[in-house]
Image 1 (cartoon, rainbow, N blue to C red):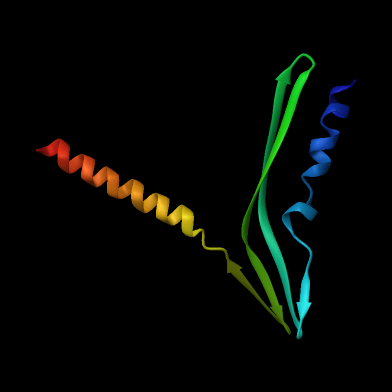
Image 2: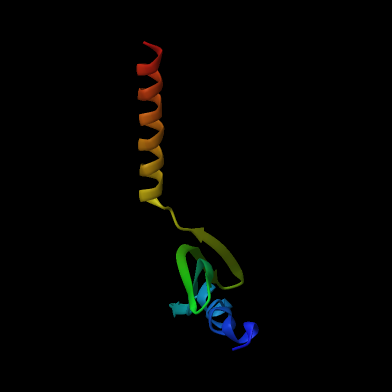
Length: 97
């Protein structure tokens, strides 16, 4: 198996179709979902692997001649960061005693 053949599957999986989802239209408004796709692979010998991850980023909303970007708000990520910062503040306060 040639090296370029080995990476053909993962390369074909990471296309614009994965980033830009199927457009939805209702009442003259078109919505195009957008995601961030990342992937990687590796291995040695006959053991090779590949993984992909997708994360919603937002959507393009098209109404008439106007296009607007509506980002996704990651509430879980925001809460995690807030807890992490609060924990760091408490730890620093305990260390100063």
